[in-house]
Amino acid sequence: MDDNGVITVRDLRRRYGGTGGRGFDAVRGVTFSVRRGELFALLGTNGAGKTSAMEVLEGLAPAARGAVRVLGCDPCRERALVRRRIGIMLQEGGFPPDLTVAETGRMWAGTLSAPRPVAEALGLVSLGHRAGVAVRSLSGGERRRLDLAMAILGRPEVLFLDEPTTGLDPESRRRTWLLIRELLGAGTTVVLTTHYLEEAEELADRLAIMHQGRIVRTGTPAEVAASQPARISFELPEDSREPVPDIAGTRASVTGRTVLLQTADLQPTLTALLGWANSRDLVLGALDARPASLAEAFHAVAASAGSPADDDNAKDVAA
Amino acid sequence: MSAGTVTVSSPGQSSHRVAALARAEGILLWRNRLALLNAVILPAALAGSLKSFGGLGASGAHDFGAMLLTGLTAFALLIAVYYNLVTAMVARREELVLKRLRTGEATDGEILAGTAAPAIAIAWAQIAVAAVAAVAVLGLNPPANAALVPVALILGTAVFVLLAAVTAAVTRTVQLAQVTTMPALWLPLVFSGLLFPLAMLPEPLRWVAEALPLTPVVELMRLALTGAAAGGHRLGLAATFSAAVIPVLVLTAWIAAAGWAARRWFRWEPRR
Image (cartoon, rainbow over all chains, first blue to last red; front, side, top):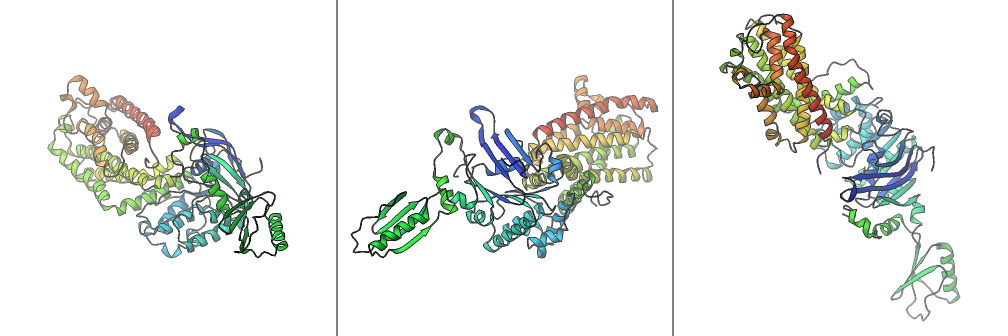
Protein backbone atom coordinates (compact mmCIF):
# COMPACT_ATOMS: atom_id res chain seq x y z
CA MET A 1 0.00 0.00 0.00
CA ASP A 2 1.15 3.51 -0.80
CA ASP A 3 1.88 5.16 2.52
CA ASN A 4 2.33 8.53 0.86
CA GLY A 5 -1.25 8.48 -0.37
CA VAL A 6 -3.50 11.42 0.41
CA ILE A 7 -6.06 8.82 1.45
CA THR A 8 -5.25 5.36 2.72
CA VAL A 9 -7.89 2.82 3.61
CA ARG A 10 -6.92 -0.49 5.14
CA ASP A 11 -9.38 -3.33 5.78
CA LEU A 12 -12.29 -0.92 6.30
CA ARG A 13 -15.44 -2.49 7.67
CA ARG A 14 -18.73 -0.83 8.43
CA ARG A 15 -21.78 -2.39 10.01
CA TYR A 16 -25.36 -1.20 10.47
CA GLY A 17 -27.66 -2.38 13.19
CA GLY A 18 -26.70 -4.67 16.04
CA THR A 19 -24.07 -7.34 16.24
CA GLY A 20 -25.00 -10.88 15.37
CA GLY A 21 -27.53 -11.90 12.76
CA ARG A 22 -29.68 -8.77 12.80
CA GLY A 23 -26.98 -6.39 11.65
CA PHE A 24 -25.83 -5.74 8.12
CA ASP A 25 -22.22 -5.48 7.00
CA ALA A 26 -22.28 -2.70 4.40
CA VAL A 27 -18.51 -2.61 3.92
CA ARG A 28 -16.59 -5.86 4.41
CA GLY A 29 -12.88 -5.23 4.39
CA VAL A 30 -11.94 -2.65 1.80
CA THR A 31 -8.36 -1.56 1.10
CA PHE A 32 -7.20 1.13 -1.30
CA SER A 33 -5.21 4.34 -1.46
CA VAL A 34 -5.60 7.56 -3.39
CA ARG A 35 -2.57 9.55 -4.57
CA ARG A 36 -2.32 13.32 -4.57
CA GLY A 37 -3.89 14.94 -7.59
CA GLU A 38 -5.59 11.87 -8.98
CA LEU A 39 -9.25 11.04 -9.40
CA PHE A 40 -10.23 7.78 -7.79
CA ALA A 41 -13.69 6.45 -8.68
CA LEU A 42 -15.75 4.01 -6.65
CA LEU A 43 -18.21 2.10 -8.79
CA GLY A 44 -20.78 -0.45 -7.83
CA THR A 45 -24.40 -1.47 -7.97
CA ASN A 46 -26.89 0.07 -5.54
CA GLY A 47 -26.13 -1.21 -2.06
CA ALA A 48 -22.57 -2.19 -2.96
CA GLY A 49 -21.29 -0.06 -0.07
CA LYS A 50 -19.90 2.95 -1.96
CA THR A 51 -21.70 5.61 0.08
CA SER A 52 -21.13 3.71 3.32
CA ALA A 53 -17.39 3.69 2.59
CA MET A 54 -17.43 7.34 1.51
CA GLU A 55 -19.12 8.38 4.76
CA VAL A 56 -16.22 6.93 6.73
CA LEU A 57 -13.65 8.73 4.54
CA GLU A 58 -15.64 11.96 5.00
CA GLY A 59 -15.60 11.57 8.78
CA LEU A 60 -19.37 11.31 9.00
CA ALA A 61 -19.28 7.83 10.51
CA PRO A 62 -16.66 5.81 12.38
CA ALA A 63 -15.31 2.61 10.91
CA ALA A 64 -16.35 -0.60 12.66
CA ARG A 65 -12.86 -1.91 11.93
CA GLY A 66 -9.83 -0.99 9.89
CA ALA A 67 -7.77 2.15 9.48
CA VAL A 68 -8.63 5.21 7.42
CA ARG A 69 -6.29 8.20 7.00
CA VAL A 70 -7.19 11.32 5.07
CA LEU A 71 -4.36 13.85 4.71
CA GLY A 72 -2.57 11.95 7.45
CA CYS A 73 -5.41 12.24 9.97
CA ASP A 74 -8.28 10.14 11.25
CA PRO A 75 -11.22 11.85 9.50
CA CYS A 76 -13.64 11.08 12.34
CA ARG A 77 -11.58 11.74 15.45
CA GLU A 78 -9.48 14.55 13.96
CA ARG A 79 -12.46 16.04 12.16
CA ALA A 80 -11.58 19.69 12.77
CA LEU A 81 -8.11 19.23 11.24
CA VAL A 82 -9.38 17.37 8.20
CA ARG A 83 -12.56 19.26 7.41
CA ARG A 84 -10.92 22.58 6.59
CA ARG A 85 -8.92 20.85 3.87
CA ILE A 86 -11.65 18.76 2.25
CA GLY A 87 -14.91 19.43 0.40
CA ILE A 88 -17.88 17.09 0.43
CA MET A 89 -20.84 16.70 -1.89
CA LEU A 90 -23.33 14.17 -0.57
CA GLN A 91 -25.51 11.96 -2.70
CA GLU A 92 -28.45 13.56 -0.90
CA GLY A 93 -28.00 16.84 0.87
CA GLY A 94 -30.15 19.92 1.19
CA PHE A 95 -30.10 23.64 1.61
CA PRO A 96 -32.98 25.65 3.11
CA PRO A 97 -35.56 26.10 0.31
CA ASP A 98 -36.38 29.66 1.39
CA LEU A 99 -32.82 30.99 1.12
CA THR A 100 -31.62 32.36 -2.20
CA VAL A 101 -28.62 30.84 -3.96
CA ALA A 102 -26.45 33.79 -2.89
CA GLU A 103 -27.68 33.62 0.73
CA THR A 104 -26.89 29.92 0.78
CA GLY A 105 -23.40 30.68 -0.47
CA ARG A 106 -22.90 33.39 2.14
CA MET A 107 -24.05 31.05 4.91
CA TRP A 108 -21.75 28.24 3.78
CA ALA A 109 -18.81 30.60 3.24
CA GLY A 110 -19.27 31.88 6.78
CA THR A 111 -18.59 28.40 8.13
CA LEU A 112 -15.31 27.97 6.18
CA SER A 113 -11.75 28.90 7.13
CA ALA A 114 -10.63 30.16 3.73
CA PRO A 115 -13.55 30.41 1.31
CA ARG A 116 -13.22 31.61 -2.26
CA PRO A 117 -15.65 34.41 -3.23
CA VAL A 118 -19.22 33.06 -3.43
CA ALA A 119 -19.72 34.60 -6.89
CA GLU A 120 -16.62 32.79 -8.15
CA ALA A 121 -17.87 29.42 -6.91
CA LEU A 122 -21.33 30.01 -8.42
CA GLY A 123 -19.68 31.03 -11.67
CA LEU A 124 -17.67 27.80 -11.78
CA VAL A 125 -20.90 25.78 -11.84
CA SER A 126 -22.68 28.26 -14.15
CA LEU A 127 -25.13 29.38 -11.47
CA GLY A 128 -24.06 33.03 -11.36
CA HIS A 129 -27.22 34.17 -13.11
CA ARG A 130 -29.39 32.37 -10.51
CA ALA A 131 -27.85 34.06 -7.44
CA GLY A 132 -31.06 35.84 -6.47
CA VAL A 133 -33.34 32.83 -6.94
CA ALA A 134 -34.75 30.86 -4.00
CA VAL A 135 -33.34 27.35 -3.68
CA ARG A 136 -36.91 25.96 -3.84
CA SER A 137 -37.25 27.39 -7.37
CA LEU A 138 -34.12 25.68 -8.70
CA SER A 139 -34.38 22.62 -10.94
CA GLY A 140 -32.96 19.34 -9.68
CA GLY A 141 -29.86 19.78 -11.82
CA GLU A 142 -29.33 23.33 -10.57
CA ARG A 143 -29.53 22.10 -6.97
CA ARG A 144 -26.86 19.51 -7.72
CA ARG A 145 -24.66 22.26 -9.15
CA LEU A 146 -25.28 24.48 -6.10
CA ASP A 147 -24.26 21.52 -3.94
CA LEU A 148 -21.06 21.16 -5.98
CA ALA A 149 -20.36 24.90 -5.72
CA MET A 150 -20.60 24.67 -1.92
CA ALA A 151 -18.31 21.62 -1.89
CA ILE A 152 -15.56 23.55 -3.70
CA LEU A 153 -16.21 26.88 -1.91
CA GLY A 154 -13.48 26.21 0.64
CA ARG A 155 -10.79 25.47 -2.00
CA PRO A 156 -10.47 21.86 -0.79
CA GLU A 157 -7.30 19.81 -1.30
CA VAL A 158 -9.44 16.68 -1.36
CA LEU A 159 -12.90 16.65 -2.86
CA PHE A 160 -15.46 13.89 -2.18
CA LEU A 161 -18.19 13.69 -4.79
CA ASP A 162 -20.99 11.18 -4.23
CA GLU A 163 -22.80 10.81 -7.56
CA PRO A 164 -22.23 14.44 -8.54
CA THR A 165 -23.91 14.30 -11.94
CA THR A 166 -27.00 12.26 -11.13
CA GLY A 167 -30.00 14.21 -12.45
CA LEU A 168 -27.95 16.51 -14.67
CA ASP A 169 -28.77 16.94 -18.34
CA PRO A 170 -25.98 15.87 -20.75
CA GLU A 171 -24.75 19.43 -21.24
CA SER A 172 -24.53 20.14 -17.49
CA ARG A 173 -22.82 16.80 -17.01
CA ARG A 174 -20.23 17.69 -19.65
CA ARG A 175 -19.60 21.07 -18.01
CA THR A 176 -19.29 19.41 -14.61
CA TRP A 177 -16.68 17.04 -16.06
CA LEU A 178 -14.77 20.05 -17.40
CA LEU A 179 -14.86 21.67 -13.95
CA ILE A 180 -13.68 18.47 -12.26
CA ARG A 181 -10.83 18.22 -14.77
CA GLU A 182 -9.87 21.84 -14.06
CA LEU A 183 -9.82 21.10 -10.34
CA LEU A 184 -7.65 18.03 -10.97
CA GLY A 185 -5.35 20.17 -13.08
CA ALA A 186 -5.00 22.57 -10.17
CA GLY A 187 -3.86 19.68 -7.95
CA THR A 188 -7.10 18.74 -6.21
CA THR A 189 -7.48 15.08 -5.28
CA VAL A 190 -10.95 13.74 -6.06
CA VAL A 191 -12.82 10.69 -4.81
CA LEU A 192 -15.93 10.10 -6.86
CA THR A 193 -18.76 7.61 -6.85
CA THR A 194 -20.91 7.32 -9.92
CA HIS A 195 -23.45 5.15 -11.68
CA TYR A 196 -22.27 6.38 -15.05
CA LEU A 197 -19.50 4.17 -16.39
CA GLU A 198 -18.62 6.67 -19.10
CA GLU A 199 -18.09 9.22 -16.32
CA ALA A 200 -15.55 6.95 -14.64
CA GLU A 201 -13.95 6.13 -18.00
CA GLU A 202 -13.75 9.86 -18.80
CA LEU A 203 -12.42 11.13 -15.46
CA ALA A 204 -10.86 8.38 -13.37
CA ASP A 205 -7.12 7.82 -13.09
CA ARG A 206 -7.89 4.70 -11.12
CA LEU A 207 -11.07 3.07 -9.95
CA ALA A 208 -12.45 0.27 -7.84
CA ILE A 209 -15.60 -1.70 -8.47
CA MET A 210 -17.39 -2.63 -5.26
CA HIS A 211 -19.82 -5.50 -4.97
CA GLN A 212 -21.59 -6.56 -1.78
CA GLY A 213 -19.26 -4.56 0.44
CA ARG A 214 -15.99 -5.66 -1.16
CA ILE A 215 -13.69 -4.35 -3.86
CA VAL A 216 -13.76 -6.93 -6.64
CA ARG A 217 -11.77 -5.06 -9.34
CA THR A 218 -9.33 -2.21 -9.09
CA GLY A 219 -6.88 -0.44 -11.37
CA THR A 220 -6.93 2.07 -14.21
CA PRO A 221 -10.11 2.02 -16.32
CA ALA A 222 -8.13 0.21 -19.05
CA GLU A 223 -6.77 -2.38 -16.61
CA VAL A 224 -10.19 -3.06 -15.13
CA ALA A 225 -11.71 -3.36 -18.59
CA ALA A 226 -8.92 -5.79 -19.54
CA SER A 227 -10.14 -8.18 -16.87
CA GLN A 228 -12.78 -9.14 -19.43
CA PRO A 229 -11.89 -10.82 -22.74
CA ALA A 230 -11.63 -8.79 -25.92
CA ARG A 231 -14.13 -9.63 -28.65
CA ILE A 232 -13.75 -10.29 -32.37
CA SER A 233 -16.85 -10.89 -34.45
CA PHE A 234 -17.28 -11.53 -38.16
CA GLU A 235 -19.56 -13.25 -40.65
CA LEU A 236 -18.41 -16.18 -42.75
CA PRO A 237 -19.29 -15.99 -46.46
CA GLU A 238 -22.61 -17.64 -47.38
CA ASP A 239 -21.06 -20.36 -49.51
CA SER A 240 -18.27 -21.12 -47.06
CA ARG A 241 -17.89 -24.67 -45.90
CA GLU A 242 -14.98 -23.75 -43.63
CA PRO A 243 -15.24 -24.77 -40.00
CA VAL A 244 -14.73 -22.04 -37.44
CA PRO A 245 -10.99 -21.53 -37.00
CA ASP A 246 -9.45 -23.04 -33.91
CA ILE A 247 -7.13 -20.39 -32.50
CA ALA A 248 -5.30 -21.07 -29.23
CA GLY A 249 -6.59 -19.17 -26.21
CA THR A 250 -9.93 -18.22 -27.71
CA ARG A 251 -13.49 -19.23 -27.12
CA ALA A 252 -15.70 -19.26 -30.16
CA SER A 253 -19.45 -19.15 -30.38
CA VAL A 254 -21.43 -19.34 -33.59
CA THR A 255 -24.88 -17.94 -34.31
CA GLY A 256 -25.87 -18.71 -37.87
CA ARG A 257 -23.01 -17.35 -39.97
CA THR A 258 -21.88 -14.92 -37.27
CA VAL A 259 -18.85 -15.96 -35.26
CA LEU A 260 -17.81 -14.40 -31.95
CA LEU A 261 -14.30 -14.99 -30.63
CA GLN A 262 -13.39 -14.06 -27.07
CA THR A 263 -9.73 -13.72 -26.24
CA ALA A 264 -7.41 -12.33 -23.60
CA ASP A 265 -4.84 -11.31 -26.27
CA LEU A 266 -6.53 -9.34 -28.98
CA GLN A 267 -3.61 -8.71 -31.34
CA PRO A 268 -2.21 -12.25 -31.72
CA THR A 269 -5.72 -13.66 -32.03
CA LEU A 270 -6.61 -11.14 -34.68
CA THR A 271 -3.36 -11.81 -36.55
CA ALA A 272 -4.03 -15.54 -36.50
CA LEU A 273 -7.61 -15.03 -37.66
CA LEU A 274 -6.63 -12.79 -40.57
CA GLY A 275 -3.84 -15.23 -41.57
CA TRP A 276 -6.36 -18.05 -41.54
CA ALA A 277 -8.81 -16.04 -43.68
CA ASN A 278 -6.07 -14.99 -46.15
CA SER A 279 -4.80 -18.52 -46.59
CA ARG A 280 -8.32 -19.60 -47.55
CA ASP A 281 -9.20 -16.51 -49.59
CA LEU A 282 -12.08 -15.81 -47.31
CA VAL A 283 -13.69 -12.35 -46.99
CA LEU A 284 -14.87 -11.85 -43.43
CA GLY A 285 -18.01 -9.71 -43.33
CA ALA A 286 -18.84 -7.18 -40.58
CA LEU A 287 -15.42 -7.68 -39.06
CA ASP A 288 -15.25 -6.06 -35.64
CA ALA A 289 -12.43 -6.31 -33.09
CA ARG A 290 -12.36 -4.41 -29.82
CA PRO A 291 -11.02 -4.67 -26.28
CA ALA A 292 -13.48 -5.10 -23.43
CA SER A 293 -15.06 -1.90 -22.18
CA LEU A 294 -15.37 -0.82 -18.57
CA ALA A 295 -19.10 -1.38 -18.96
CA GLU A 296 -18.52 -5.06 -19.81
CA ALA A 297 -16.24 -5.49 -16.80
CA PHE A 298 -18.83 -3.79 -14.61
CA HIS A 299 -21.75 -5.85 -15.85
CA ALA A 300 -19.72 -9.03 -15.43
CA VAL A 301 -19.25 -8.12 -11.76
CA ALA A 302 -22.88 -7.11 -11.27
CA ALA A 303 -24.09 -10.35 -12.85
CA SER A 304 -21.89 -12.58 -10.70
CA ALA A 305 -23.99 -13.94 -7.85
CA GLY A 306 -22.58 -13.72 -4.37
CA SER A 307 -22.42 -16.76 -2.12
CA PRO A 308 -25.75 -17.63 -0.47
CA ALA A 309 -24.48 -16.39 2.89
CA ASP A 310 -23.82 -12.98 1.36
CA ASP A 311 -27.21 -12.77 -0.24
CA ASP A 312 -28.97 -13.08 3.10
CA ASN A 313 -27.54 -9.77 4.15
CA ALA A 314 -27.43 -7.98 0.84
CA LYS A 315 -30.65 -6.10 1.35
CA ASP A 316 -30.09 -3.36 -1.18
CA VAL A 317 -28.02 -5.13 -3.76
CA ALA A 318 -29.37 -4.72 -7.26
CA ALA A 319 -32.38 -2.85 -5.91
CA MET B 1 -33.44 41.36 13.15
CA SER B 2 -31.36 38.23 13.19
CA ALA B 3 -28.84 37.49 15.85
CA GLY B 4 -25.24 37.81 14.88
CA THR B 5 -25.64 40.55 12.28
CA VAL B 6 -22.93 42.36 14.20
CA THR B 7 -19.83 40.22 14.37
CA VAL B 8 -16.21 41.02 14.92
CA SER B 9 -14.91 37.49 14.52
CA SER B 10 -12.79 36.33 11.63
CA PRO B 11 -13.17 33.29 9.35
CA GLY B 12 -12.27 30.01 10.94
CA GLN B 13 -13.46 30.99 14.40
CA SER B 14 -16.31 29.23 16.12
CA SER B 15 -18.21 32.49 16.71
CA HIS B 16 -17.89 33.32 13.02
CA ARG B 17 -19.42 29.99 12.00
CA VAL B 18 -22.28 30.30 14.51
CA ALA B 19 -22.97 33.85 13.33
CA ALA B 20 -23.14 32.77 9.68
CA LEU B 21 -25.57 29.96 10.51
CA ALA B 22 -27.61 32.23 12.81
CA ARG B 23 -27.88 34.87 10.11
CA ALA B 24 -29.28 32.33 7.64
CA GLU B 25 -31.68 30.95 10.25
CA GLY B 26 -32.78 34.51 11.04
CA ILE B 27 -33.58 35.14 7.37
CA LEU B 28 -35.61 31.92 7.32
CA LEU B 29 -37.56 32.91 10.42
CA TRP B 30 -38.17 36.36 8.94
CA ARG B 31 -39.60 34.73 5.79
CA ASN B 32 -41.78 32.31 7.78
CA ARG B 33 -44.30 34.97 8.84
CA LEU B 34 -46.58 32.62 10.76
CA ALA B 35 -43.75 31.31 12.93
CA LEU B 36 -42.47 34.85 13.40
CA LEU B 37 -45.90 36.17 14.50
CA ASN B 38 -46.32 33.20 16.84
CA ALA B 39 -42.96 33.85 18.42
CA VAL B 40 -43.44 37.61 18.76
CA ILE B 41 -47.15 38.12 19.50
CA LEU B 42 -48.21 35.02 21.39
CA PRO B 43 -45.98 35.31 24.48
CA ALA B 44 -47.01 38.94 25.07
CA ALA B 45 -50.71 38.18 24.56
CA LEU B 46 -50.61 35.18 26.89
CA ALA B 47 -48.60 37.02 29.52
CA GLY B 48 -51.21 39.81 29.44
CA SER B 49 -53.99 37.28 29.99
CA LEU B 50 -52.34 36.00 33.19
CA LYS B 51 -54.06 38.84 35.03
CA SER B 52 -57.21 36.75 35.10
CA PHE B 53 -55.40 33.87 36.83
CA GLY B 54 -54.58 33.89 40.51
CA GLY B 55 -51.18 32.23 40.42
CA LEU B 56 -48.57 34.88 41.00
CA GLY B 57 -50.92 37.34 42.67
CA ALA B 58 -51.82 34.84 45.36
CA SER B 59 -48.22 33.79 45.80
CA GLY B 60 -47.24 37.23 46.93
CA ALA B 61 -46.33 39.11 43.78
CA HIS B 62 -48.94 41.81 44.10
CA ASP B 63 -46.98 43.80 41.64
CA PHE B 64 -48.63 43.49 38.19
CA GLY B 65 -45.42 44.53 36.41
CA ALA B 66 -43.44 41.72 38.03
CA MET B 67 -46.16 39.23 37.19
CA LEU B 68 -46.24 40.37 33.58
CA LEU B 69 -42.48 40.14 33.22
CA THR B 70 -42.29 36.71 34.86
CA GLY B 71 -45.16 35.44 32.73
CA LEU B 72 -43.62 36.80 29.57
CA THR B 73 -40.32 35.11 30.38
CA ALA B 74 -42.14 31.79 30.79
CA PHE B 75 -44.14 32.12 27.55
CA ALA B 76 -41.13 33.36 25.59
CA LEU B 77 -39.19 30.25 26.66
CA LEU B 78 -42.12 27.96 25.85
CA ILE B 79 -43.18 29.47 22.53
CA ALA B 80 -40.41 31.59 21.00
CA VAL B 81 -37.67 29.20 22.11
CA TYR B 82 -39.09 25.71 22.63
CA TYR B 83 -41.96 25.41 20.13
CA ASN B 84 -40.24 27.50 17.49
CA LEU B 85 -37.03 25.51 17.73
CA VAL B 86 -38.71 22.11 17.55
CA THR B 87 -40.29 23.10 14.23
CA ALA B 88 -37.07 24.69 12.96
CA MET B 89 -34.91 21.67 13.85
CA VAL B 90 -37.40 19.20 12.34
CA ALA B 91 -37.72 21.31 9.17
CA ARG B 92 -33.93 21.56 8.72
CA ARG B 93 -33.51 17.86 9.36
CA GLU B 94 -36.24 16.79 6.92
CA GLU B 95 -34.91 19.20 4.26
CA LEU B 96 -31.53 17.40 4.68
CA VAL B 97 -29.98 20.72 5.70
CA LEU B 98 -28.60 19.42 9.00
CA LYS B 99 -27.04 16.47 7.16
CA ARG B 100 -25.42 18.84 4.66
CA LEU B 101 -24.20 21.24 7.36
CA ARG B 102 -22.50 18.35 9.17
CA THR B 103 -20.20 17.85 6.17
CA GLY B 104 -18.69 21.29 6.72
CA GLU B 105 -16.35 22.78 9.28
CA ALA B 106 -19.05 23.70 11.80
CA THR B 107 -19.27 21.33 14.78
CA ASP B 108 -22.55 19.78 15.91
CA GLY B 109 -22.77 22.25 18.78
CA GLU B 110 -22.17 25.19 16.45
CA ILE B 111 -24.92 24.01 14.10
CA LEU B 112 -27.38 23.75 16.99
CA ALA B 113 -26.29 27.12 18.39
CA GLY B 114 -26.68 28.78 14.99
CA THR B 115 -30.13 27.26 14.55
CA ALA B 116 -31.22 28.31 18.04
CA ALA B 117 -29.73 31.83 18.04
CA PRO B 118 -32.58 33.75 16.32
CA ALA B 119 -35.21 32.15 18.57
CA ILE B 120 -33.17 32.98 21.65
CA ALA B 121 -32.62 36.52 20.38
CA ILE B 122 -36.38 37.02 19.90
CA ALA B 123 -37.18 35.64 23.36
CA TRP B 124 -34.58 37.77 25.12
CA ALA B 125 -35.53 40.89 23.14
CA GLN B 126 -39.17 40.40 24.15
CA ILE B 127 -38.16 40.07 27.78
CA ALA B 128 -35.99 43.19 27.53
CA VAL B 129 -38.80 45.20 25.93
CA ALA B 130 -41.25 43.93 28.55
CA ALA B 131 -38.83 44.91 31.32
CA VAL B 132 -38.54 48.45 29.98
CA ALA B 133 -42.32 48.66 29.56
CA ALA B 134 -42.91 47.30 33.06
CA VAL B 135 -40.64 49.94 34.54
CA ALA B 136 -41.85 52.84 32.39
CA VAL B 137 -45.60 52.14 32.22
CA LEU B 138 -46.42 49.92 35.18
CA GLY B 139 -43.93 51.40 37.62
CA LEU B 140 -42.09 48.13 38.35
CA ASN B 141 -40.04 48.45 41.50
CA PRO B 142 -36.27 47.90 41.28
CA PRO B 143 -35.58 44.13 41.46
CA ALA B 144 -34.95 42.62 44.87
CA ASN B 145 -32.01 40.60 43.49
CA ALA B 146 -31.10 41.58 39.91
CA ALA B 147 -28.36 38.93 39.72
CA LEU B 148 -30.95 36.17 39.60
CA VAL B 149 -32.50 37.49 36.35
CA PRO B 150 -29.63 36.38 34.06
CA VAL B 151 -29.39 33.12 36.03
CA ALA B 152 -33.07 32.41 35.33
CA LEU B 153 -32.79 33.44 31.68
CA ILE B 154 -29.61 31.59 30.81
CA LEU B 155 -30.45 28.35 32.62
CA GLY B 156 -34.08 28.45 31.46
CA THR B 157 -33.06 29.06 27.85
CA ALA B 158 -30.54 26.22 27.95
CA VAL B 159 -33.17 23.82 29.33
CA PHE B 160 -35.74 24.63 26.65
CA VAL B 161 -33.24 24.61 23.76
CA LEU B 162 -32.14 21.12 24.83
CA LEU B 163 -35.73 19.97 25.37
CA ALA B 164 -36.49 21.22 21.85
CA ALA B 165 -33.65 19.05 20.51
CA VAL B 166 -35.01 16.01 22.37
CA THR B 167 -38.57 16.69 21.15
CA ALA B 168 -37.30 17.14 17.57
CA ALA B 169 -35.77 13.67 17.82
CA VAL B 170 -39.24 12.11 18.27
CA THR B 171 -40.98 14.41 15.76
CA ARG B 172 -41.11 13.07 12.22
CA THR B 173 -42.66 16.06 10.47
CA VAL B 174 -43.15 19.76 11.13
CA GLN B 175 -46.93 19.17 11.36
CA LEU B 176 -46.46 16.53 14.06
CA ALA B 177 -44.62 19.11 16.19
CA GLN B 178 -48.05 20.48 17.14
CA VAL B 179 -48.67 17.18 18.92
CA THR B 180 -45.23 16.23 20.21
CA THR B 181 -44.66 19.60 21.85
CA MET B 182 -47.87 19.39 23.91
CA PRO B 183 -46.47 17.57 26.97
CA ALA B 184 -43.50 19.87 27.41
CA LEU B 185 -45.63 22.96 26.74
CA TRP B 186 -48.60 22.25 28.99
CA LEU B 187 -47.34 20.27 31.99
CA PRO B 188 -44.60 22.74 32.92
CA LEU B 189 -46.97 25.68 32.32
CA VAL B 190 -49.89 24.34 34.36
CA PHE B 191 -47.62 23.49 37.31
CA SER B 192 -45.34 26.50 37.01
CA GLY B 193 -47.12 28.55 39.66
CA LEU B 194 -48.21 31.07 37.04
CA LEU B 195 -51.81 29.84 36.75
CA PHE B 196 -52.45 28.91 40.40
CA PRO B 197 -50.29 28.97 43.51
CA LEU B 198 -48.42 25.71 44.00
CA ALA B 199 -49.22 25.97 47.74
CA MET B 200 -52.69 24.74 46.75
CA LEU B 201 -51.23 21.36 45.79
CA PRO B 202 -50.86 18.50 48.27
CA GLU B 203 -47.29 17.87 49.39
CA PRO B 204 -45.99 15.13 47.04
CA LEU B 205 -47.61 16.75 44.00
CA ARG B 206 -46.05 20.09 44.90
CA TRP B 207 -42.60 18.52 44.87
CA VAL B 208 -43.29 17.14 41.44
CA ALA B 209 -44.42 20.58 40.28
CA GLU B 210 -41.24 22.14 41.63
CA ALA B 211 -39.16 19.61 39.73
CA LEU B 212 -40.71 20.53 36.36
CA PRO B 213 -38.52 22.70 34.11
CA LEU B 214 -40.55 25.93 34.04
CA THR B 215 -41.32 26.19 37.77
CA PRO B 216 -37.74 27.03 38.80
CA VAL B 217 -37.58 29.76 36.14
CA VAL B 218 -40.77 31.34 37.52
CA GLU B 219 -39.45 31.00 41.06
CA LEU B 220 -36.12 32.59 40.20
CA MET B 221 -37.82 35.47 38.36
CA ARG B 222 -40.20 36.03 41.30
CA LEU B 223 -37.29 35.96 43.75
CA ALA B 224 -35.32 38.31 41.52
CA LEU B 225 -38.08 40.83 40.91
CA THR B 226 -40.02 40.88 44.17
CA GLY B 227 -37.90 38.98 46.69
CA ALA B 228 -41.01 37.00 47.63
CA ALA B 229 -40.60 33.41 48.82
CA ALA B 230 -42.93 30.66 47.65
CA GLY B 231 -45.12 31.32 50.69
CA GLY B 232 -45.44 34.99 49.79
CA HIS B 233 -43.35 36.62 52.56
CA ARG B 234 -40.54 38.96 51.48
CA LEU B 235 -36.95 37.82 51.89
CA GLY B 236 -33.77 39.78 52.45
CA LEU B 237 -31.08 39.82 49.74
CA ALA B 238 -29.05 36.99 51.31
CA ALA B 239 -32.16 34.89 51.81
CA THR B 240 -33.12 35.28 48.12
CA PHE B 241 -29.79 33.70 47.20
CA SER B 242 -30.32 30.72 49.45
CA ALA B 243 -33.91 30.38 48.21
CA ALA B 244 -32.50 30.28 44.67
CA VAL B 245 -30.30 27.25 45.30
CA ILE B 246 -32.97 24.60 44.78
CA PRO B 247 -34.43 26.11 41.58
CA VAL B 248 -30.90 26.45 40.17
CA LEU B 249 -30.16 22.81 41.02
CA VAL B 250 -33.42 21.68 39.40
CA LEU B 251 -32.58 23.59 36.20
CA THR B 252 -29.03 22.22 36.20
CA ALA B 253 -30.39 18.69 36.51
CA TRP B 254 -32.73 19.33 33.57
CA ILE B 255 -29.82 20.62 31.49
CA ALA B 256 -27.82 17.49 32.29
CA ALA B 257 -30.73 15.15 31.57
CA ALA B 258 -31.93 16.87 28.39
CA GLY B 259 -28.34 17.31 27.20
CA TRP B 260 -27.70 13.60 27.66
CA ALA B 261 -30.96 12.67 25.90
CA ALA B 262 -30.28 15.06 23.01
CA ARG B 263 -26.79 13.63 22.57
CA ARG B 264 -28.22 10.13 22.66
CA TRP B 265 -31.27 10.53 20.41
CA PHE B 266 -30.95 13.67 18.30
CA ARG B 267 -30.98 12.72 14.61
CA TRP B 268 -29.21 14.72 11.92
CA GLU B 269 -31.02 13.18 9.00
CA PRO B 270 -34.51 11.81 8.34
CA ARG B 271 -35.28 8.28 9.39
CA ARG B 272 -35.28 6.06 6.32
